[in-house]
Image 1 (cartoon, rainbow, N blue to C red):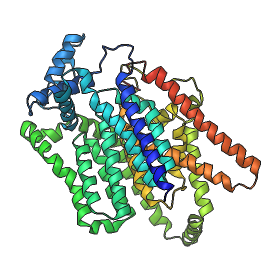
Image 2: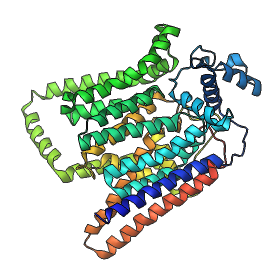
Image 3: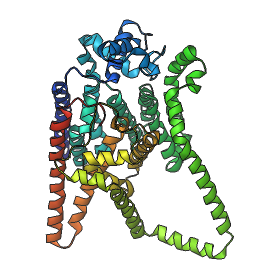
Image 4: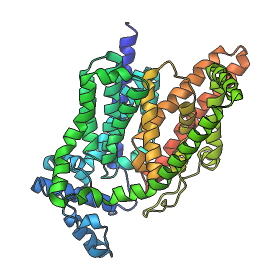
Length: 477
């Protein structure tokens, strides 16, 4: 006990230092074109100013005028939401931006404080979640990798809602895990409240709610008998209700039927829905046909024996993970090239990428995601049932936005620290397992290789930060 307390204090102070350092560095980061601001940054800055002046002034009309004055784009050629009477996203992030400007002034630099603060808090949140799931060492190392991650740092320097959404998603997930571990039902209420703030930041903040429902349905159905848990699922919708009422008051039913992004998503996901329905129907038909055959009953017994075999399970999952890395081989080679810089742009240049884009893109930025993808399929933490919600959240975010299209890494920012936690935990697991190897030479050389791999990942992250994050005003990456 006397050893654990100093360790806890040292770890927490180290993570606080990382969080503080992140805020300071991102605040003072040099941009080659300091006057450049993406359209979204101008929009959120102006929304914050509007809310500061008048609580119900929530549209991007002033942003449209400012952009048309300072660029060659005419106001009429801007997207429709610029001239809509109500902005398309819920108001929590612009509200935080307006609060920042009430305290520190109206300058656009002040509007960045929210993203920078949330990026710093994301480091702390990663530590707390990773520590609870996998221990202090994994917690500190995960926090360090979030501190170094180029994607998170680039988002933290922009007036974008994504760091806020990522922080709220991790906080809600952490409180949910705490509720499961401590059986303190008030953690459910807190988790639901934070999920409500995430939903009021962006509609996709509701994905964490789906995590809770899926986990409870497949892994812990007795949660549905807990009235606090049930209330926590409805609480975010209750918190969103005023915003929905305001939309209905302004647009009527067209707030749903005419929602631009909803229509885009339905158009993108329609082929997957049709394929899924047809595929499921075919599988059911084949199953019912084979069920009549006697040899199929014998085959079921063989399948049951194979599925219950732990070695077969591990080999199968490892093969799945390795297969994924083979599919992503081009991105993997980019990750292994120390001086390779992923493509970045000021204009949207990733619209027509394949569905594997997000999986490959993260791997291209850091080799730590190779360990994360292996961890997604391996059962190295099978005994740790509290890690399951983490995997579900990652899967939901990556699959949802892969189906959405219009690829931008900031959309999946909430999944990045979760993948880093999995990757570090997997690396740590491999390192510990090597102690069981009988040959001292093989064990030593393998541990050395793993440690050198970690050093390589850290050095390359530093290289990318200096050459991309702190030296270029990029919008798409």
